Image 1 (spheres, rainbow, N blue to C red):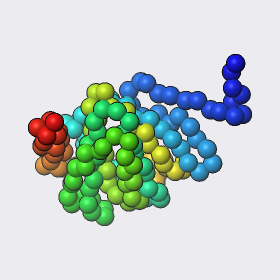
Image 2 (cartoon, rainbow, N blue to C red):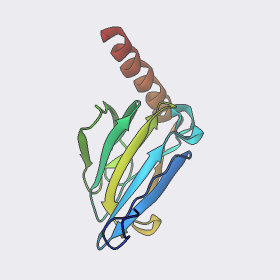
Image 3 (tube, helix red, strand yellow):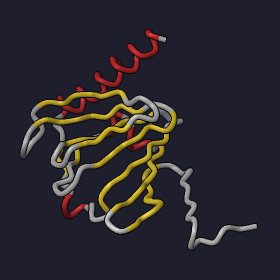
Length: 147
């Protein structure tokens, strides 16, 4: 017996990349799966959301969240290894990006009005791009050593 969509909405996303799966009122739930453009050597900019926070939850695999300090440009970059089933709330105005392992799946909860119009990108210098690569190597190597 099928349950009415008036009672239950079921959605999923198993392809590469980002896809909103449920929109309701002022919020959106999306899924982010690994895609080649999320390899650290391919990240050329960080993004921020000027009007809202954004929540990330690692469901499987590995995800390293990159956070940038600075107002108009990125002045320092930090890496945060995400722990599965833990909520990470990236604050409004914080520069960010992420790299995922090939088996990763991340749940994203954001304001439904989050668009490219209110979410600018800041290009990274070649030195900052190298920082992302090095952070990934260091953090993911440390985790493997601890296991």
